[in-house]
Length: 502
Image 1 (spheres, rainbow, N blue to C red):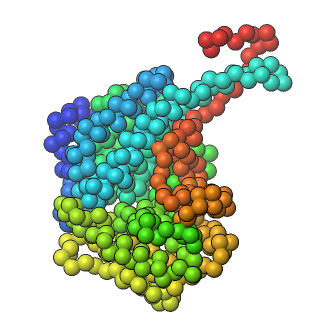
Image 2: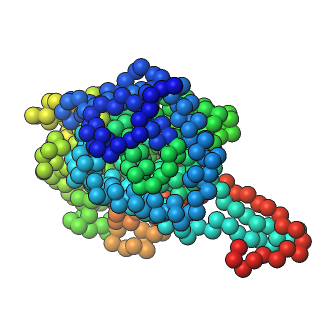
Image 3: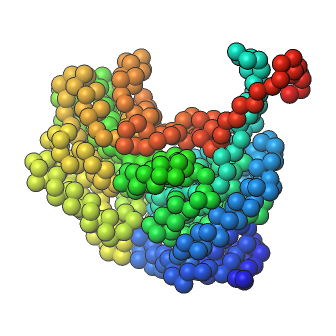
């Protein structure tokens, strides 16, 4: 038997940003079967941040078995939804209490400035936990329907053991979103965080246990593609929830289909911001630009195609360039920094390849980004804005996941709508106009799962997800909770009287 140790808050605090030699399996720290290590380096400085075991298939099996035992025991799945909601609220409160420590850890792993993490990860992370808590309290867990053969009792029950695979770009928010939905539903969960950000996953697992999640319900198995494959293919997993690339999502979806495993896939995007001819560009130019560049463009919902009326093209582009120039790229300890590094040298080279491809295709870099001086220790790029882009170019069709915006001119609104919809993706989008009713009318014609008028955000209480290659299923709100439930119909005998208290 591997050696185990009970989590200790003081010990956990000492290891934040350091080395973990054990895996968090079912509420205890366990020696891994694997001898491989995931090393974590800051993409901002290159400094070593820490390490975690690189879980193998045997480790995944141990985690799934712990989750299955906890689920079958009812230690969490049979807890009343309102009590599960209270635990989620406590977890949100703990995240807020320890925000400085958590933000420092996330910043060390992914390089983003602390202020950006607080706004783009902690705020929506605690928000989504509280939204799932409220959804659990409000949800109709039991319903009675009168039908052809009498009365049917309909119950909603947790799907079972959930395998959650998250991306590295917003780890705090993504883990809160996966934990919140699965735990509100009564499921047990095995988390595979991205290999770039495993330390955040370990920290949050302990925090949720401190909030009141029983032993056995949460496990964490850091690792890469092989670890994820073992989790997806494990017969003891009832559902996979995945956030990441479309290519990986398709492979996961195919594997789940083979075993009829439930899955939710939140994938890529190439979202369009439609700027109308009546826009107040002085008031909106910064936000239009920011929504394409926030998190250094490493966001599936980034509005990276900017569709502008030809009649106001130059004015809008000028405002965008001016806005982008104010977005300082810098180290996490630079209080003026708004944009951090991209996640790796490989990703930076990939982005630079797209920039060169855009130029070769005939687009003009009116803001020609590059590697900034004085930040040689990390993987930094300043923003690039292209004009003269046509929607068939690679920079307009493919998800770059970096600080690159493509401005596409149009002549009339119908053309703009057609361009916006001419994409393999359908995750997000915006319209910018002085006439909100006009914006609503356009929103109804855009094939995306989420949309904004003169703004964009993921609302924790409303469904989030995409059309087409942007994924399957919805997260957030009651729809996100329902994705982790099964529906059961029980026919009642003729003449049975349903109690008023039922």
